[in-house]
Length: 434
Ligand code: UGA
Image (tube, rainbow, N blue to C red):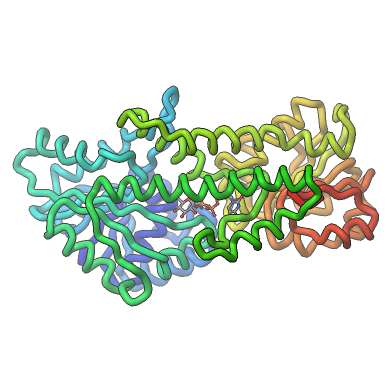
C-alpha cells in the first residue's frame, strides 16, 4: 500500500508516521523546504511525546520519506491524504479551503486511475462533493475517488490516540475507495470499531464530535460558576453525573475555557455550515459565546483576590499553552488573560515548559519570560496557574510562598488541594470549588 500525505503539519506528520509504523510505505509532502530538510535530519517541528523516535525508526527503515514535490511521488499512490490547514477564514468564520483545493488540483493532475483522494483535514460538510465536482470539471479524464477520513487525535496523546482509537470513521463514494480505506486501517481492526459511511456523514461527524465535546466543557464550566456561588465542589458534580454512562466522566474538567487549534475553529465553522444549510445551530452558538466570555473574564478572578487595581502589580502566570504536553498556544486562555492583565497595567512574569518560543511571538515585550516556575513567582502579588503541566503539580509551594510578595494563588486548573494550600498560608481561589 503506497500512501502519500500532503501537508506535514500536526495531523499530516502524526498520521503519516503512524501509517508507516503500521507497515505502509508513506511519503509526506510539504512545500516548506526548510521543514522537509529538517524532517529528513530528524528535526520534528512540533512537540508531541514519542513522535521523534517513531519518525526516526520509520525513516531509517525506509518506510517514511519526506519530499517537497508531489510530482514524482503521487503517481504511484493508492491513497492520497490531504492534511493541509483549514484555518478560520477572516470575516465569516468559515474554514478557508484554499490549501485543500490547491492540493486537490495538483493531485488530480498526477494521480493514477482508481487512486483515492482522502480529506484528513477538517473540512465543512459538502466539501467532498465540491472536490468531486471540481475534479470532474478540471480533470474530466481522471478516475479518482473521493473520501473523508476525519481525525480525532488530541495533541499531546496523538500517537496513542492513533494506535488505540475509540473508532475510525471514513466516508466514501465508491466501493473501491471503501476497500482501500478498509485495507489501510485493517491493522487497527481488532483495537477499534471501523465505521464506514458516506462522505457527507463523515464530514458532519467530525464537526459534531468536536462541537459536542466543546459543549460538555462549556457546560461544566457554567456548572462550576454555579458551584462557586452555591458553595459546592464542581469535581463532586462531575463525578456524580459522569458515573451515569449515558453522560460519561470524560471532558468534564472545569477550567479556564477550551482553546487549541480545533474546538474554537471547528465550532465557528460548524455554525457557518449550519447557516449555509439554513439551520440554526443555536446550542453551538451559545457554547461559543459562553467560552469566549469565560476566557475574557479570567483577569477578574485575579482582581477578586489582589484588588481591582492591578496597575504596577506583578502577576506570575504558570502555563501558556492551551493545555499540557504541547507547545501549541493557539486560542489559549492564557492569551486572553495576559492581554487583559497587560491592559490593566500589571507586570507579567510567565513560564511554560514548552510554550516559551511561541509565547515570544505572541506577546513580544508585554511580559517577562522566565526559565522556571520559581523565577516567575519572584515578588509576585499573585500566581495564576493556567495550564495543567505535571511539573506545576509538583512545585514546592513553601518555596513559592517565600518568593512571592503576597501569597495569592489562582488555580484555573484545580491542581492543588484547597485545604493544603490554605494551611500553607495562601489565599486560594480555584474553579468551582469555593
Ligand atoms: C480536540 C479533540 O479532543 C480531538 O479528538 C480532535 O481530533 C482534535 O481536537 C482536532 O479536531 O484535531 P485537542 O484540541 O488536541 O483535541 O485537545 P483536547 O484535549 O480536546 O482539549 C481541547 C481544550 O479543551 C483544551 O483547552 C483543554 O484544556 C480543554 N478541556 C478539555 C477542558 O477544559 N476540560 C476537559 O475536561 C477537557
